[in-house]
Image (cartoon, rainbow, N blue to C red; front, side):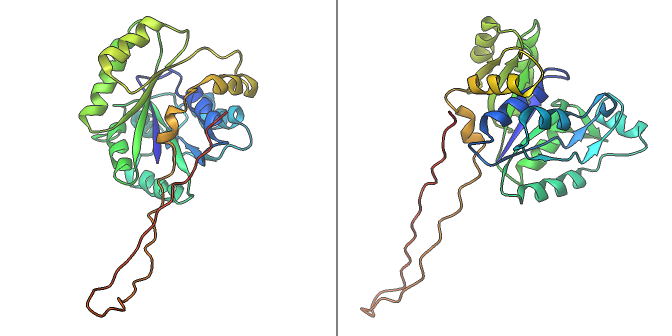
Length: 258
């Protein structure tokens, strides 16, 4: 499974939300965090921040592309004398999926950020979706303008057939905006993540303990259940019937977070 953390723009809180979700579920479900493309590394790496906030148990995969300039990935790549190859991203996805964990994937900026010539971040998510079940966690600020930005992002996701798991409003609570997004955007859930008491592990742990109390996101983070194995074929002793096969399936119990 892939839960893609998609922002309505840049600096809306995707990295903090990723750290909170990873902390909330890493003791419950096998997860790993990956930011495939990151720019602005001169100011620090988001993957390093998530690793610090989520703690030593968190599994963090390295970026496939990391650029120093805080710009749109396609431009940051060009200034670094490089280019983003979608095939390299897909190859890393296959490798990381092979680790047997669900992936929490943080995007770069907003949904329609260009990565390469004619190739948007939305196109990358579609390519990911062809390789594993995927849903999107939309992160927005609760500030003025968020209703429009969030509804546009939800509309763009649905127009491309990309499922929405929930919306997270990261910042000072604003119930009016949350309710408007639920009413007009119709996401399955709209969570609030108030400002953290500090940018450290205790603050993230406290936020994670209060986040998604009903564990609604667990359904989007569980690895797919293995197909049931068929019993060996047995020839009918009566002689007049064909072979019969019996298959049985058991449901894997997943502990809910405390």
